[in-house]
Image (spheres, rainbow, N blue to C red):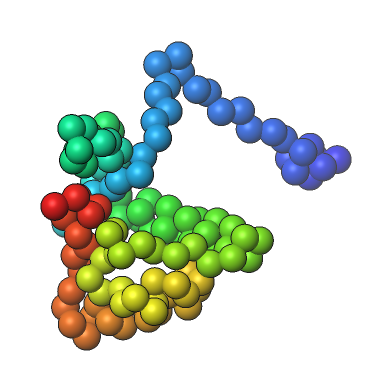
Length: 132
């Protein structure tokens, strides 16, 4: 009976009143020896030009970053299984992802991109997600 109770235990998530949810179509990654800073923002059209507006940053340990990458990969894989491959547009495509590779499903894209990045020592994307 004790085992039954432990498997049926529900966890509760506390969301504070000051919790903020934002939309982001722009990210920047800053790697440091002990952690990774992920900055989120949005691209806005202003006076016929694109402007980056950085809105929030999240710093996490490399262990948490790996955990996040794993679950992002899983969610992307499931989404693409249900909806087809997500294509990475030329304006935001990192320099280590070729045009053909940008059309691949994530599970095929990742090994190709990693191999190219390692061989060419290129790990950068367009400045600020495509904004020049």
